[in-house]
Image 1 (cartoon, rainbow, N blue to C red):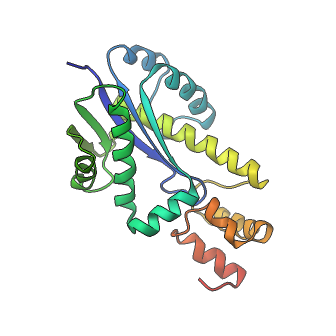
Image 2 (image 1 turned 90 degrees about the vertical axis):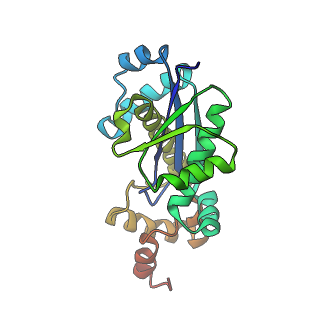
Length: 216
């Protein structure tokens, strides 16, 4: 019987710019001391620099899978699925399925992002039968915290890559700095390029269009 417990978490869900990243990680008796030495905890309690450093070791030492949905693909999926919770469930199910192809895990723990049946149905559609535990503050579980660090690191790497590709700063989150950057981005690269860097269903798109005097 495998001693692995899988955790799954995402990053970028609330960020207008950048991808949605979903990570799944399997933690067993061999991995626990490694993660303890790294002081792995919820990524929200770690600096970006520390996350990037720790994630490199996790990738080398811990079974994991990463699903990176870049904005272009994200916008296509959202238009097709039409619901963020269903899109999240699809991504979580894909990461879990990929991880289970590498290691045996009877239990999967995730943060509670939607009704449990949404993710359970997505897993069943992929023929996977595991005990799924969804809980508030799932990051308190080591496997979920490990996944949160992996997801955040991959989000930061992707954001840096986009910033270099388009030669401008892309702020995190969804506040006024994001709207200002969106206006600047369109003036520099054109409106069609926005789908390559931003999640267009966010309210920020309307605010940016309003500032540019464009129709929504």
